[in-house]
Image (cartoon, rainbow, N blue to C red; front, top):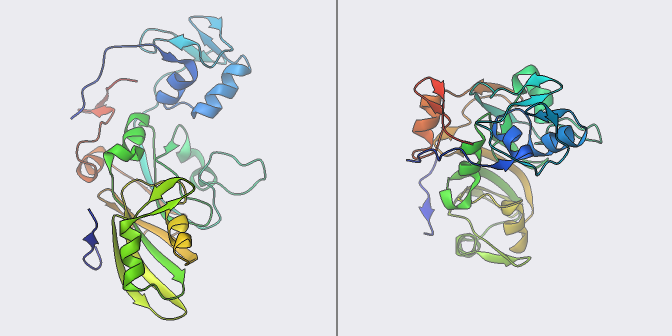
Length: 266
């Protein structure tokens, strides 16, 4: 996709085990870990008929009967969506300040979904959301080295030497930041347009990386994640991603979907 970039450099399910109650609800795709914690603390969750108010209480999800407000907590059907997140929208389920979130855009389609990583408020582009929390954890684990491709605009002219430093890496707040690959698409004294690939997705990594080298990021769009591309999807629009498409886009990823039924482990 786009100019050629020059780089700097099957999972089996485990037997049923004990996990914290809030993690069990999250892994079932029923609520985020934070939401599950609130439900449990409010006394709305029972395990084998008894109210449990400790989010860290250990349960075996495959064996326990977990209910919320008296309704059995069944695993949500497998779904994954690809959303074009607009600027000014938060990657969170709710905002105390009333700012719009990706779940406001999704409406009922967002039920039981969790974001696969996050895009900050000013960043636009490809955001995956899924009920498959095992896949989400794998895709965002630095050890998986899933590529993320961004179109970046920064203030000022980025020299070839600075581009080389982007891939060599810099230290910021005790953390090493580095791009996996960089292509300069267009530059002038006023601004530079680049294509940058990351492999880890640390918090605000590109903004911090460019700032450390004296350039402010003014526009940032994620155009690809793994083998999925944003394409012509309009800001605020979303589309479903099939399990076959996800398998092809993320080779080796553990998926809870298996031969048309839900499988895998928590």
